[in-house]
Length: 403
Image (cartoon, rainbow, N blue to C red; front, side):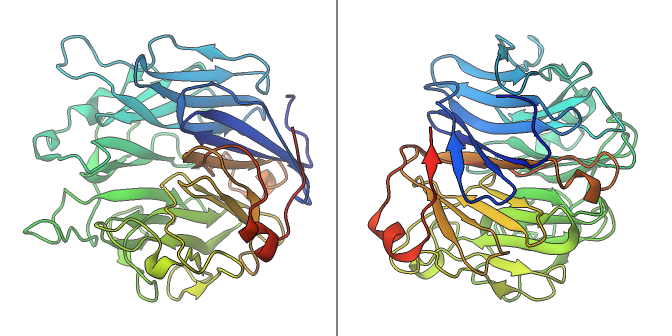
């Protein structure tokens, strides 16, 4: 594994039994796949630092040994472990269960790396190493006594640094909601106005919304979120959220994808409901909006449309910004689907992996299309072995994969 070439596309895949790196060129027709990394460990997040195009970070977890952050600064040839990962102070009364998300900061903050954990907290590093320093003002926010965990825990799972000002950042926590800082993390404000919490007596509280995923748009200003209770957009740095769920088959879901070149383009994968976490009507369906959620179009040609009881989790979608955007999504049952033409037609890239947790698409060709310092942010998680299924034979162009 070497430094990412100009014409190279990488897919970083985190699964319940390790990580994998898929490689292709800009055409994305033939792929190679690495041997398993972090064998036997659950990989909650697997990501890449676009500031040097060779640093990789993985959030790993073992039921026996707990959580850790592993990093490589040579394109994946050698890996270093933190040994103990991010940790709360001994006298805090809490301990880190697992690391949910890792985010290298923007070019305006060239050495910072952030990590979100469960129970909810934000950690940072200032030497491009594993994030170990707790951002205490967020952990000790006055709202902590009112914060309740979601089904997956009290997790900080989304980190969105401002590409233009390193002092500003949004984070999302299940289930308190979105928080914002404009002073480098010294103080934090809840920013949930306009979003619903249908499971609470007060349906529009200032705190208590269950955000499933928070993502920036290409301009670094607009934000999108998939919430437990709808899909939303903000054009005001999250001071107000606009409900953009109308036209979708369900308000519920986990994963979104944003186009790195177009702030108005967004993809979502609806899930039937909180009670039945599978595809609505047994159809794996991806919806795309080209107008910032004002309208939605089904973009599911050649995806499974009968008896498809699949689930795409919060890190399991990635968008590649070629002239016609490519989209990748992974199901918790082990399939990887992708499209090279913005969803007009999907193919099966691989299947029979272990449960996907995280998936990230990386390429250097799109960096010039982003605001200064805007980081490649596309992740998803998947499963293992690569076998051509009867569905793949019937419905998709199958891709050559070489070990």
